[in-house]
Image 1 (tube, rainbow, N blue to C red):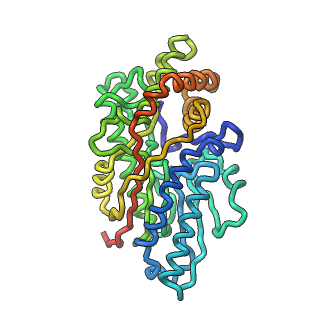
Image 2 (cartoon, rainbow, N blue to C red; image 1 turned 30 degrees about the vertical axis):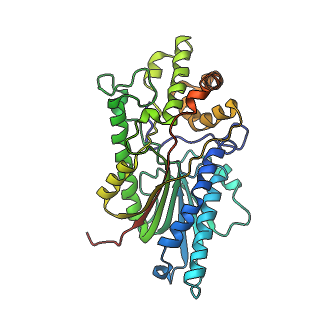
Image 3 (tube, rainbow, N blue to C red; image 1 turned 90 degrees about the vertical axis):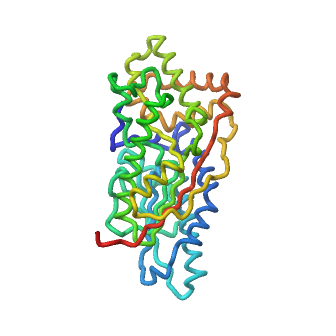
Length: 356
């Protein structure tokens, strides 16, 4: 399958099987990054550059649906207000405008139904891919993106080309070197597009905070817990294929468009862009999903992949597929708990514009 810039979304609504109800792990990542965000604003935001500012704009890219985005935004807003009060006490604190961005198919209706009633900002929804321009030139002061930039704009074309050395037959994720190289190249292209778009949109001195599942430099992808889980998930699809419930060719053409980059890879693409300085790049404390049972663990994967599965295979296999995955999780519990977990916090500052 090829996921395009139209992208796919997390499972909408607010029911028991929704992303909103099954994104506690993503919430824990936002909590783990909270102090990093506060320090980023305290040490790197310079309100004296914005003394006449009427509106401070914050963008959360890949907001999805549910309350997580509101917690992230509130932390940013509180940190900015504190910086103004402590460093520019005679300067009026500006009004805040928050842009919630995700793909056009995101469940914005549910998202905005859940907007905090006591919010101290004006809210807007911005549908579209964050790998392209979303905002006016030099209009955003703080960009935030948590657990979104691991998603590729598309599955690498080589991976679904039967004549390519990177043809990924029988697998749904990257394990072989040729496949991993194709994924790495696609992620580099996507990150370059992301940075190019943000370079146009972020004001000089503005900040971009990114939280992303990553891979320590020098650690093979096969050692990551995410890789282990997707290998297990892929074996479930193959089992359904062996039972004749889905076509083998469809399995061969299905790949998960996620890539866990490394600090080294990120540094290279940021330096190539040349518009941002790296103010901070550090690992977050290890966060594991709540131990609430294999059914819940399976559901956490379902809400982020369900739309991909439905688009490629149809909705009929969903229940059987994830029941099988739940059982395999239980069987492989000890092995799946051994994989490496590595989450990266990255803070960029927009350099002063040049005339070029």
